[in-house]
Length: 477
Image (cartoon, rainbow, N blue to C red):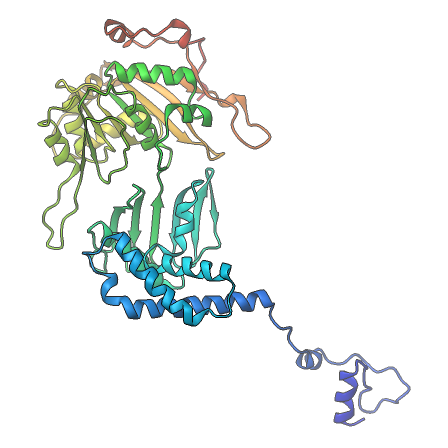
């Protein structure tokens, strides 16, 4: 059998004999490479072809809009509404010539995607609109993670390329008067809805630009929401309300993403409406509901390295603003010294947050932050300041099941020798175990110890009932 006959036999599904074999004998299996070469690849699915075509059309329409509106897209004199109207008008003209064979649904989807790329945040727009998403983490153009119900998961959303991601980052920072480039590759900013943003670009971000967005709900959470989520109990809510109204100085301690700012928002709602509140933050995150509120925000240095306003500058300035309460978004450096001095000089009822893993670690870290102020203070003097200033440490944590829980409430009792003495009032009950969904059943339970500052609260007409502190619960760690 010659080569032509062999090829015809293979196409017909028969196995031709090899050279030298009789026609009536069984021939060996043909070589695998020959069959693979003759097999025709299966055509791609129609849906995939259509998706690719839509993707190419979207890129073409977006490029056309950028070309036609390049000068006006960066016009700082235009408001967001004016820019949106301009782009929509131009987009209708472009789509009229490009989408004749598309359905109405496909046209609307294409228009939304193009608008998101040109005036919005591209593939991040639907994630920002999803109220269940609390954090968005972009690790380069092809990896977008989100936190949903306390769990982190990879999404299907993608940026076209690194250039697309950089354009979105630059659009974000330009809206708040910041800049980001190779000479200044780090930036903190916030969106119009208060969501906090951190962006890092090459050469600092080696694998591609990184963008982190911490979302905040449009409606601030209230104490009833935290009780419903299981973060705190009704008894703890009553206790914390009494402490805030009684003008105790409170530190909220916890790790990154544990809910410190959310709890600070909730506690600030207990401050009476007639008191003057001054807040100090790196980026405005607090959503206070009172009318008499002044919000101060720090400012980074400009291109020449001048004009920086630090948190410490703002804390010191707030003392001259006749505040009834000073609320510091987070203590992370030398401003801790100024905050302690304010607490010790008549500005009681102050609130702040700090990064730490327990109440004991919170006080130790506070000492370290005071030393960062550059003052050559003896350790005992610092501890005396802490013991006199801080009344209560509220410890919250993000547990293994993704939930945020209040795990410890500790009173700062004073100084014995060189040691700060604390007393636990509430502790989380880990021994309750987990349910069938992998969620902790326990909650913070009273230790049976009545705090020493209850006398101070009673003098102000705030009574803490004895049954609020329950039975003694032994500490298990």
